[in-house]
Length: 584
View 1 (tube, one colour):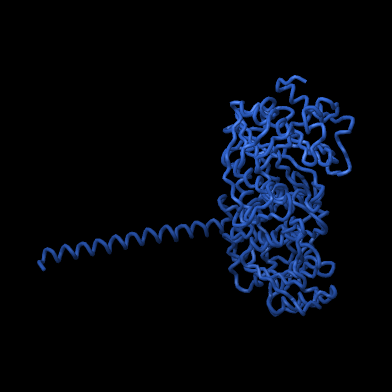
View 2 (cartoon, rainbow, N blue to C red):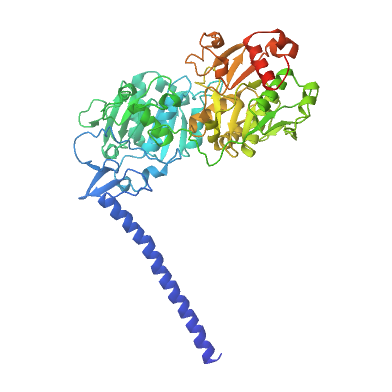
């Protein structure tokens, strides 16, 4: 090898080593410089708006609880019990239910000697696991952010037959480190309040951690609760919470431990309340809608837990795009078009004035009414090659098939969907077309476990609307066994989770079942025995649509029957024929 070639190789190797060395310095500066900046921020109390968390900061060698919103520091070494503040809701704002963001920057979590960050629940109930119980676990996830939750149960938590209260199953999907402990033959634990309390003390003595009652909802969780040997927040037997070190002893009456109190949820219902409790006890049924658009402290704190904001998120209009002025209908099986179906089409063409009406189906319709409609240039039949499976599950009920394709059509094309037994009475208000998705409530008659449900027989949507995308994802749990579950009930559960994705317009449609009609803008519309159309102040022209699910009124079964009748339903039919230029 020549000396010149040897020197060139040495220079190349030296240059590579030099570049690697310089790159290492640069990376080290970025990493350690960033950590220094973060630590400086923590020590000075400066907050990073990107994190949006409550820091635990070190000042003067002591651990302090710091709220970036109130800019107040509370020394946790004080002997004064920490109850929190009424104007600061110290809950992490991450979107995931299991939220690691709750611990970002909280260097106090690294202190030695803290109580184990494990939460224990004890379920002795023979009943359904309801929303308020789920809310308890959600609050634990967002305030304590435990390493593990152990759910001890004597009886497995149930759900109702209508599948509204599936909160326990939801919880199992949302928290990855949830352990279920079947007490089995040890069910004597639940024989009395005393036996439950003894089991709690014994479990915490053996394992350490935090016991939380299933009616207890946290709004904040001060670090000092894990610094103490015992922090007692129990009341009324086993309600509330208690924190204990592994190996600690507590007889329930010692005065040497810090004692905190969880107030009843009702104590927060005053808008001007100034209570300072870190938690609340909520008994009895409670639903997400109970917190919607309310100004009391409890509702706002529940909204923070559910939606990361004290105010309920609402659908907002946007005029950057509008709901397309096209109509959609779905009909499987072909056959002769009924008179009510014909009226529905006429109302969309001549009253709603859609640019084009698309009728989606597997077979083309027949009969004189369809023959007439085919002559309209803006009526188009769209062939569907339907599948009998959804997420590998069989679909046997035709209406359930329509539920699936309605979602797909709204996502693909957007527009105005109308059932074949619904008719339009007046055009859509122009402002509605600015929302992503629009629907109205049905009236709960068959599904009384649900606080409400959505009637999807008339809906409006922009293409790609988030509400329908999220709804389509839920069909992985498709059920063909319960009528209305996929098209009425699951859409409401989606609204509970994402109230900002759907605008509810109560005058969009009036639902009629068994010939009783229930306009949802009446406060008592849920009364199944009321026929609101007989109210003296009811005017059918106030609604945008009327929708007869079962049965079809006699006067709307044929044109002759309509012309012979003078009922309100007949007046609606004649109104459509007149708008269509038909001679009566």
